[in-house]
Length: 337
Ligand code: SF4
Image 1 (tube, protein in one colour):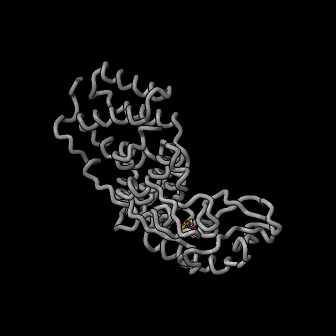
Image 2 (image 1 turned 30 degrees about the vertical axis):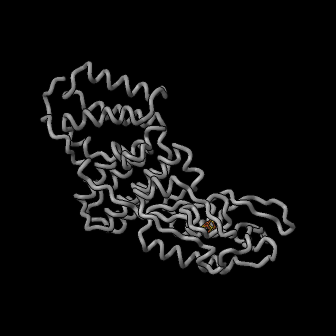
Image 3 (image 1 turned 90 degrees about the vertical axis):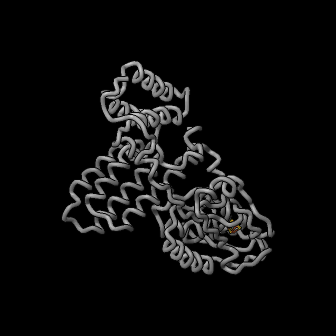
């Protein structure tokens, strides 16, 4: 190593000093073990209660209980009685009792209240006529299978809070979807917290500079668009700048970050080591990025190595990048992608 640039020493970094707040996340109550299902059972998901509960401030909701359907209750299903999703009714499986209007009214009220609570994400029960995010079974009036839809409560969540990261518990079993959802929840929390605070154009420049590489891994064009927005923010109405930044930022993170884009970001980071690490060390880092590119090691390997040298050489610009730690390390999310 050349040791020619920033001083070595204390590993405490700007990045590590930044607190990771516990974002508030909505969840279908049965997934946390609440016995609220139609048969008085639950669908306890241990990953949520034993792992994510340490990092998320969960807000549990059972739409069917809260709307007054009781426990136990008759099971319901979605019936297509007219064209389009507006023609979907929620009916008791045996009695045909129509719960649609009550559920719509409840969902509008409850989702508005959840929006005011500052939710940063929502985990929904797969397949539920109320909570299912997508591909919920529907039936014709004769009881035959019809095209799938969203549950009524989930549809209202999507309509009223279109930027809110939503996921289903079963999809969280997939390492890529899990990492992406949790990254988006923390990003939502950061961007919302930033614009809810007393921000200035100067602090927006700083915020964007921290998020740059993370956004680039998802959507390089969006990162440039955000850069232009920040550069032209002075003198523009604040609400307009905030709304535009938030929308582009969240839409960018909602796109998957493919391996090749991670490789681009990692190589860009390597460029910052040109004058602070010797050639053999840089080549070793480059080799690790190449192993990641080939799928031989997971993302955590090059990121951990880079983070080590970033801290060791105190490269301030990189230390501040949320890309190096977009969610709590203990969740081990980058060990499997
Ligand atoms: S899926 Fe939704 S409505 Fe059904 S029991 Fe769970 S929380 Fe309640």
